[in-house]
Amino acid sequence: MTTTTDRLATEGVGPRAAAGSGSGAGSGTGVLAAVSAAVESLAAGDASRCWQLFDGDVTGALGLVGTARQLLEAVEVALVREGVTRGLPDEAGRSPHDWVTLSEGVRAPQPDPREVARVLRVAGAGRRGVRPAVESVVEAFAAGDFSLASADQLVRFEGEVAPVADPEMLDADLRILLEAARDDRPGHDGGERRAGLTGRQLRAAIVRTGRMLRPERDLESEERQARAARGLYKSSGPAGLSTYRLVLDPEGAAIVDAAVAALSAPVPDADGAPDERTAAHRRADALLDVVGRGVSASTSEPGGPRTQLMVTLPWSTLREEIDQAGAAGGFGGGGSTRCPTQQGCGAGTTATGDVLSPGVVRRLACDADVVPVVLGGPGEVLELGRARRLFSVGQRRAIWLRDQGCTYPGCTIPAQWCDAHHVRWWSRGGATDVANAALLCQRHHTRVHQRDLTATVTSTGVTWHV
Image (tube, rainbow, N blue to C red; front, side):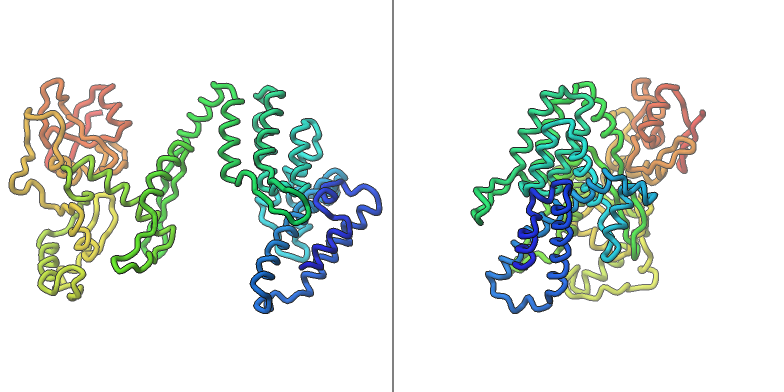
């Protein structure tokens, strides 16, 4: 590896030399010879014998790998800039992206498309030469002051903001960002290198700077568009699992990140054993914990169950299995978990249509408010008349089970996303009774009020007169 770096240096492929256009036969020949020598040297090495290195040599070799990566990225950007300037992609009948991908993939795996896009953007910025601050970014990257990723962030920032920002202000702010991202290198004599802004820090600084440069009306429009792009998507996963994809704007992402980060730290066991869950597993558990706490806070008394889960299954089945588990030693007490009877092996169905095994229902019954299809138990009143305006928790359970979702014709919104609507409005003397209630999603709830629609409510459902 020392030989590789020495050859790169002696052939004139330092960071600054690599950023040039390769003009002149000597310079071009030097680049080709240096890259060829580096490849030959690395190919001749036997990476499987790294175990023979001393500890200090392993660390030193990794440092040389970082240097080689920077040098090669600088050469890559310079070569791509030269090839695009000469029109080589057009001559080959390919886009610049495909030309780079196929050229680099002749004798090696094709590069990642995102990396190719970065190289093309930085190479293109060097060709434009219209804004001095952008030229400074490319020169600083070629000098090895920061990574290709940081250079790409700065170049993209300039391209996105330039159409709406004052040129002088943009140049000044871009130079400030450039200096903050640049590593502090006391010299090229092996002195300590102090890193500039990390990729995440630079992204945050760019966002803040962009907000100051963009007109306020543009920011408001962008924020509205970002909020409108929020989405939660569910699809079937392997082995009966479910996959969720959550798309959020920066505001929503900040809320979720803050909530999940606070609850996803590793939790050692009581005996001090480390948490064996992966980071992804901990984040999923934290998100479920946040949702469970929210549901509990909105529907339960303080200190009540952590969350509420409505499961449609015979109460006799659930009770039989709980009694059987308790007689065998309790949940988690070493007793048998096999179904005591053939009838007791039936599954439970939640209000959202997910099927849970009896074992899962038994576990949830320990710390969640599992509500089987037995409503209006001792002390729970379902018909409150005019005694209160809002429907009680027990009433909502009954309405959920009866309506199963939004009752407006053709709507498929599930029950947990619906409001309990007074069919005869409260303001018009309507009672807060299950017989005067109907589930409506937010959109159809608004429509019913706007059109003053009425409905017929029976014990089996709701029929709207539209």
